[in-house]
Length: 400
Image 1: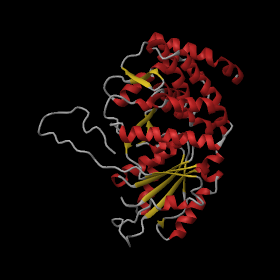
Image 2 (image 1 turned 180 degrees about the horizontal axis):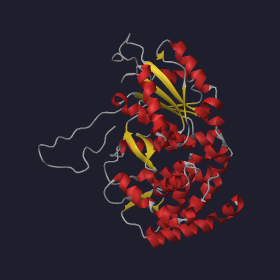
Image 3 (image 1 turned 90 degrees about the horizontal axis):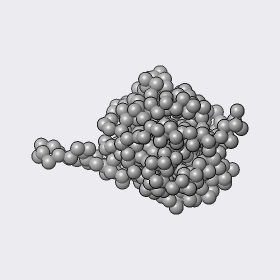
Image 4 (image 1 turned 180 degrees about the vertical axis):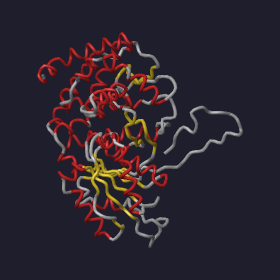
């Protein structure tokens, strides 16, 4: 992985620029708890210089409590690891709260760190984290700060995490009532995107991940946006062949940006993968995380598409296609928290503070044609909010 060596390049000979080599291991499987188990086993390298006869590495498994309750796959993976003879599995899988509960309580992180300590893990040990994006965030943060980094293998179990955050390099928890205020950048040792885990998702959580797929296709791949728009109803019906294709494409677009975009650790101003996120993060906090991240992102993308149409010439027809696509996927276009729109707008300043420097928000001139802007026309954004409410009116009435 390459990245921009310095956000403020200097010709001073005392300034030494260097690049830290990284490897991102992504595997896609249909049943990692069955025929595809070797894909997981083969990324768990021996602990002694990966040489023949090296020591068996220690491994612990953390899993989302709801996933453990709803799927036998976690227990099966543990049994297969124990029988392999290739690793030292320490104890049984340990449950971790799912959703934002995992990120809102420092007690969760303290417990995870205690488990790392009690298991005697070191930098050549492995933590296998199985769960949704929030649980992976908390697990990744604990793994990144223990011994300054323990090898983390993520097995995302939601469409949202498989399509987006699971392949990312961010780990964080919420603090001061703010999303992802405490965290690290750390490249996961490996990511296993397994389709089998998606089969037990509730419908609401299944469709959530596709807001991120819509987002990244709008930024980077017009043909993919066309395909998602065409197939939205089939995805909502859980046609797995289509859904998995879209997840794989979204994952690759996100991963390509991270590994070839020149700024994986966000040292520069632009943060294009956060299109639609300034309001999404604010909505999550305002609703005490009752709204799902994917739902909030869908609303944020819809809002910023309307704003882009009002201010930057993004074709209104494409903006309407976005709204239609999100609705066909089964995602909401409105939340009652948006009624306090001035409070939503305060998310712009929080967004700026989180990155630092001047405000930089990604908007669109066209599908596949993003731009970075540094000021927001508040009157136009309020108008975008009014138009979004009008577009969402039928779903608002049906929900009331």
